[in-house]
Length: 142
Ligand SMILES: [Zn+2]
Ligand SMILES: [Zn+2]
Figure 1 (tube, rainbow, N blue to C red):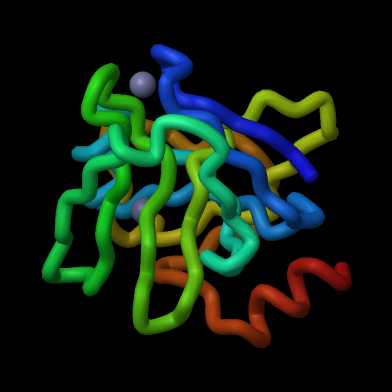
Figure 2 (cartoon, rainbow, N blue to C red; figure 1 turned 180 degrees about the vertical axis):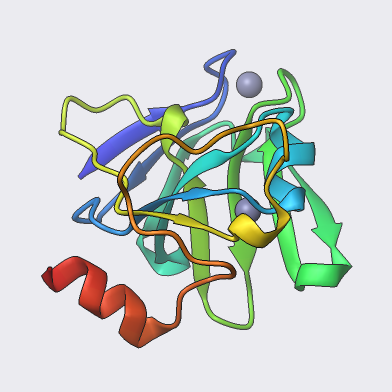
């Protein structure tokens, strides 16, 4: 189990996950929502996320174009996760985790819409869009 929280600490959550499926997402939605060229995300099942405190402060913004809900703290504005109901998955904002575990992004994804002013200067594999399930599997086994 690992725990995380928002900036103001009102919302606390725990997750049951091995913290392996971590990517740097360069899509426009992440850039806009976070005010940053990319967001480091952990893909994991929604069912493995548990709200410990402050659930009533959790707000959601529907992003119709991606059939997802971006969930954030209505008090401090911290983005916590993006919920994809059709897949039963979330992409959790890794920077909100309060864990000592070692975290390693495994890829840069959605680089077709990345900010032109941000040069990607790491050696991680790059994907123009979101990797498929099998591509993710290969990344994890390599
Ligand atoms: Zn907060
Ligand atoms: Zn994104």
